[in-house]
Amino acid sequence: MPAPIHDFVTRYAAADLSRLHMPGHKGRGPLGCEALDITEIAGADELYEAEGVIAASEAETARLFGTAASFYGAEGSSQCIRAMLFLAMQAADAAARPLLLAARNAHKALLYAAALLDFDIEWLWPGEPGAGGSLCACPVEPGQLADALARLAGAGRRPFAVYLTSPDYLGGVQDVAALAPVCHGQGVPLLVDNAHGAYLRFLPGGSRHPIGLGADLCCDSAHKTLPVLTGGAYLHVGRGLLAPEPAAVRGAMCLFGSTSPSYLILQSLDLAAEALAGGWPQRLAACCEAVAQLKEELAALAPGLVRPSEPLKVTLDAAALGLSGRALADRLRAGRVECEYADGRLVVLMFAPDNPPRDYARVRAAVQGAAAAGPAAALPPALPAGIWRQLQREAAPRLTIRQAVFARQEQVEASAALGRVCALPTVGCPPAIPIAVSGEEIGPAAVALFRYYGVGRAAVTL
Image 1 (cartoon, rainbow, N blue to C red):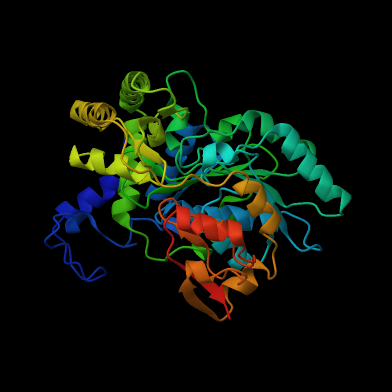
Image 2 (tube, rainbow, N blue to C red):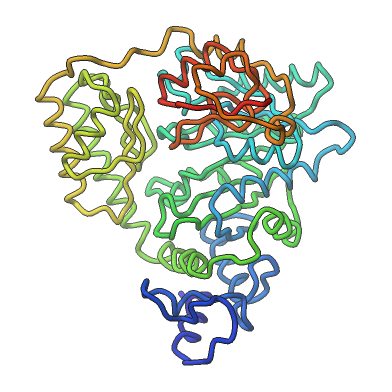
């Protein structure tokens, strides 16, 4: 199939024209890609008013993903998250103060969106033991969601949307197919941060992509799992409660994005569509099989070592080997493996079809070596029992998110933040999941989590 954006840029680069336009490198430079790095010149189309090559490429992507429409972003899912929340707010009752119902394990981009758009968030919390002792996971059950919607309705509050993160950073997947009807039965749209799951549409056993399971709007970080440059993302529109006009979606993306989008990223998204229409799904099937085999081999080393996760993630509970997550990450690093994430207990490895066989062998050898070496002399302390219930009880908002984010603030030692009001989201990054949410009072549970996740300083209001 043609790749209209890339084809245009390639022709332009070969035409040997005098580039009396941006960017300033004029097609020459040390990186080697400068000739393909252009701006919105005649024929190149405009991302936020697309009618030409970009619109054609996006239409092909929408066909491949089975969406009502798909739109490109060059600034990651963060841009798409803000845009889809804006679109959902626009479609809601403007008379009431806007409220979002969201699972607590949301990326900090959600909080920045709440600050910019000035809405409140009612949180869905994980049950004890807190999804395996990690702030990265927050499984939501249909009954739990129905109860939360009913409770809000009884208080005279109707959320403009429900917001889920799926897959989460550890590879946990929400049951979108069961949760979407709960939302729709109350006339509430479902938004999904699917940053880690763009590939789910192309699984060999059939699509598990949120749009196909009933989500109304969904963002994908294409660069996380597809052959796309960092920053490439999609905003997908489903066929449910929300049907924004293309101009409205482009306007929302423009509101939160640069007017100078990277044409290198746009070409990458364009060529990804070509790959997805070709042999990439077959390569994905082989990759999923190889990852499943690796998980099986590692699981045999110690009970509980491999946690359940979506097909391209390997999530290891280092405590099963008598190690901390960071210690296991160091042993992997010594074996020439760099992990995606490690904390006091867990290690996350992300695979994709472009990982060669040696990468699987290195992981296998490093983890086998760690298992044979035996436990470390000292393990970090475990999270206190009941920490998530305690955090839920303590996380009382004293300011709106917007008020806290834009307030005068200072940085303090995390241990000195007790009793203060969180200003900017306080996270361990990656994965950028807030421990304390802007506007909430920081209690003992949050301070304990700061210590556990290695957060040294916190931003608090003055």
